[in-house]
Image 1 (tube, rainbow, N blue to C red):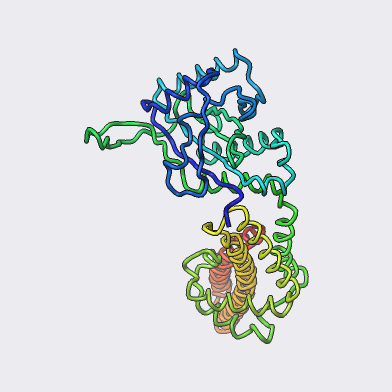
Image 2: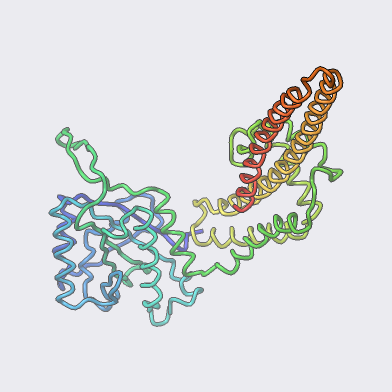
Length: 417
């Protein structure tokens, strides 16, 4: 199955001929050529991204208008201004990032964006898609205030596609040493490579805007949150539930002493994690069997949609896996919250017993001293000493209480996450 959306990305250095070609073609109307694009190929050279990019300028039969983040169409003066900004970027040694977003026309037609009979596309929607996608990219790379980009929509190939070029007129990225393989010498240049996660976000943004799966995905998230909310609202105690009571104790026995580390993502709870996961499975089977069936069905539906968008070679199962892991994490933290409450209650019980014992011993010691020394004139002195000892015992008890109260406040903070 061919993917519905393909993203090809590369960058060129400021001294390359491709950079110059782009600038030279920015306001040129001749030299128009047909560029063949093999969207299914993994070879970069088979997807010649930008060498003849601006050959298409102002050719209504082949593409829509050149547009930017704020302009749907540029007049001659605005084109010149943009061209000068690209020239400034080149002079200041900025890389040029090049992206081509290509679409399966049949898929676009299913989404209501392409008319096969007239070979036209909803340009307003496509410009919106590109703008939101580029905003995502620039934000991910920290260039939302420093970069500018231009784009154009192409009709002349089997797959409708958009070309985008991005530069920083005043570069902000760090400089790095790079080896020139031809001369075998090192030189400094601005870091041009973008993070793989950035490119993944770009492709996801394109597909999600067009498909608008927000409603379906909100249902998935609501099912995830609902399982946790149900436990809290119904005050379900897994520490005393017959099927999980033993597992609950086993997990608590394997948790670290520091209760602040009782979070599902922490490595310090690794010894208890298997027990917590088993408690999660039992809870979901017992209290949410229908919801889990619905959740898995919706996740499978999303997987099918993503397979159509990204093709067989993509990691389309990742969305489902990520959401199921999220459910496990949410439930794990809910269980650990209950464990903190149980641990706190047990410690408070011991704490109260210590108070009672200390008060009892202090009172007994005071009574004994008062009895044996009542008539020797030292009663007042011994009473004073007993009072000091009682205060010392209470002070130690207060410090225990203060430490427990701080832990209490931490637990409340964690429950708000």
